[in-house]
Image (cartoon, rainbow, N blue to C red; front, side, top):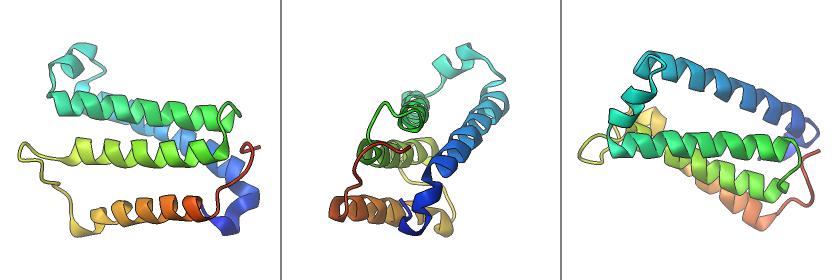
Length: 126
């Protein structure tokens, strides 16, 4: 997504992928105690959020290993990650319960998608 880091995209994707696996493990422990039953008992929107997050991680993996194009990686990872963030942080009134600075991912996601629309990458990540 960052033109000035074009040579490092593969390494940054690898780093992102691994940080998200750590995020997943920590969240599963902190919020669900590694219990699949607790996940199934949670609100539907939280279950949707977990699904979106897992799809986002799958997208990163597929992009890193060259199974999807860089364009598809950027678009799908951006949309899935911002959707995961919103569905995880929204309250029962569908209002985000975050500090003002945490709204920054939304305009950044729009900027990333707009940049990719203007200058679509060609080929695979590696």
